Amino acid sequence: MSNFKLWAALVFFFSFVAVACGTVDAEGPGPESDSDSDTDSDSDSDSDSDSDTDSDTDSDTDSDTDSDTDTDTDSDTDSDTDSDTDSDTDTDTDTDSDTDTDTDTDTDGDCPGQCVAQGACRTLNGTYLPDYTCPAETPICCEPGVTDTDTDTDTDTDTDTDTDTDTDTDTDTDTDTDTDTDTDTGTGSKWDGGMFVGNITTYGSIRDDFMQYWNQLTPENEGKWASVEGNRDNYNWNSVDRIYAFTRDNNIPFKQHTFVWGNQSPSWIGGLSGPDAAAEIEEWIHDFCERYPDTELIDVINESTPGHAPAGYAQTAYGNDWIIKVFEIAQRECPNSILILNDYNVLSWNTNEFISMARPAVNAGVVDGIGLQAHGLADWSYNDVSSKLQQIADLGLPVYISEYDVDVQDDNRQRQVMEEQFKLFYTHPSVKGITLWGYIYGSTWVDHSGLIRDGNFRPAMTWLMDYLGK
Image 1 (cartoon, rainbow, N blue to C red):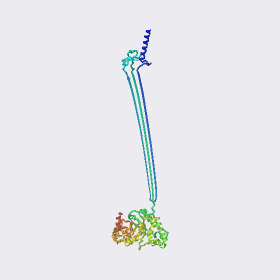
Image 2 (image 1 turned 180 degrees about the horizontal axis):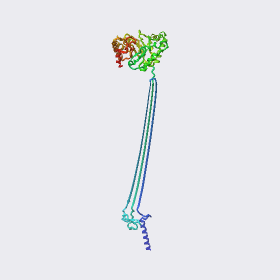
Image 3 (image 1 turned 60 degrees about the vertical axis):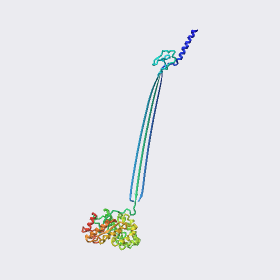
């Protein structure tokens, strides 16, 4: 019984030791290896695309039409096209790759160099002793070596794509059309061709040498009413047609002489009643200006100073204001012509009488210019003629020396008078033109006023041509 008890006690002891050594892991207590692998992959892709298209089209069309007859047409077309295209493309790619590998080997050297474990003991230098039996006095087994391996892989990919497209198209179209049409029915387009020195026809003809010396033409008798309408309502325009055509062909001003005059008017006009006479005056002026609309200058009324040769038939037709009335008719019928009140002895004996007669019509605004015949001035002093010329200029209208001549037989004396008086007229600021009354000796209305005798220049003509640069 005692042996049995001893055997039983030993079995119990070794069983206790086995339990105490921890032999519980069926796979054995070999080394432990922990391996952690973390892989993080972040991929960000941002794509921004902005497209702005602005198109502005402004079209302004202004059309203004005013009606009056001088036709001025201004057409302005401005076209501005601005096209701006901005394209911005930004691509940002960020790739971050981080790989972290951590290997931790922990060797616990707490045991005295040997472990108790069936088949799994090792020394401090890592040598395993699988068959070594630890002594009973070492009840605690040391931990096997531990190896930790951590692998972290982080991949970050950021892709940013920004596309900005701006398209600006500005189209501005401005069309301005201004049409101004001015119709002048009054006096606004009258001739203003500057100073001229003209002459007249010679016995109804225009001499071949006329354009060598002169740049304005007046018919001496061909344009007078009696010459054109000797019989009532029966016109003979032949001579005036020819003279007018000559001035058009040679581009020189034509001066009509004259509409209304107490002399050289048709004989039949004096026997008419007032209304009939008025109708015939208006018809005559209308028909002339309709036929010759571009006549530059017209002696509308001739020699109307009292005591001269006023037209009694016109006074019968219109009363005491007949001068104003006749000019009003001429204004209406001949809007393109300079309308002149013409008379003689104005620069000699009858200056004041002329001014008194002319002032009402001048003040009425119907007269465009004053015509001074300037005959018979050879014996008048320079100062007298100059003073009287200024008196007429003070009326405020342009002055035309309309019928100038120097009736002097002596060549040198004629030259002296011509030089003195012509210079006075030509340089006076109010004088706009000078017409000499004939130039062929023996073919003028007075005996000795001719400037060319037997084909030769008289001294006055030589001086005049030199002065004019002919």
